[in-house]
Amino acid sequence: AQSVTQLGSHVSVSEGALVLLRCNYSSSVPPYLFWYVQYPNQGLQLLLKYTSAATLVKGINGFEAEFKKSETSFHLTKPSAHMSDAAEYFCAVSEGGAYDKVIFGPGTSLSVIP
Amino acid sequence: NAGVTQTPKFQVLKTGQSMTLQCAQDMNHEYMSWYRQDPGMGLRLIHYSVGAGITDQGEVPNGYNVSRSTTEDFPLRLLSAAPSQTSVYFCASSPSSGGYTGELFFGEGSRLTVL
Image 1: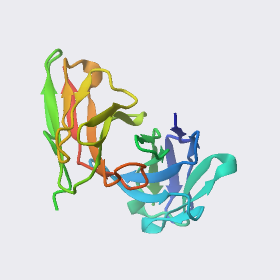
Image 2: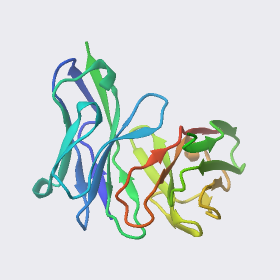
Image 3: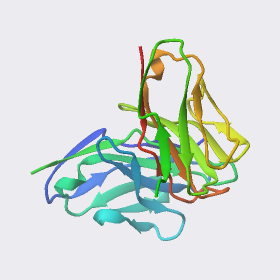
C-alpha cells in the first residue's frame, strides 16, 4: 500500500527566502504524486501534480517540485517566500488503477516571517 | 458553480448518537471520497467510491458507513458516535472513472464534535 512521509511538521522561513518542503513516498508501482495547499478554515486545493511526464513539475503561485525516483522523493520548492504562502501543505500519492485511492501525508505548516 | 457541497458545516453530537454527513457534487465526477483531518495526522481516507454502486474502505473505515446510489451524492454515516470521531471531515471528488491521475476537488469541510 502506498504511503507518504513529510519531514518537518512545521517550517519557518523569512520573507524572500527559499521554501523547501520535503515529501517521501512509498509505492509498489510508479506513483502519481501531488502537492495540495490548505489555507486556514478552507478546503484543500491542488498546487501541482506529477503524472509520469516531466520530472520537474511547475505549479501555481511559483511553486515547483521534482520527482526523484532513486530517492523516492517529491520535494516542494519556491525560490522566494511571500507572506501569502503561509498555509498547511500536504503531499499525496496515488497508484492509479481501477480501484485507486489517494493517500495524504501528515502535512507541513509553513510560517513566513516578515 | 457549486462544486462539492457538504452539509452540515458544524455539528455537535452526544456519544452514541448517529448522524449522516451529506456530500453532493454537480460536476458529474465518478470518484468521490471522504477524509477526516486531525491535528498532526493530515488527512486520512475513510471510504471512497469509483462510481455509483461501488464503494471501498480507506485507511480508517471503522465506525463509518457509506453508499453511492447516484453519481452526485456520497453520504457518510456515523453509526454510533464516539469522542474519537471528533474531527473535521472533508468530501472530495475527481473526474477520473478509473485509474486516478486527476485532481481532487474538496468541499469546505464539516466540523463534528462528539461529547
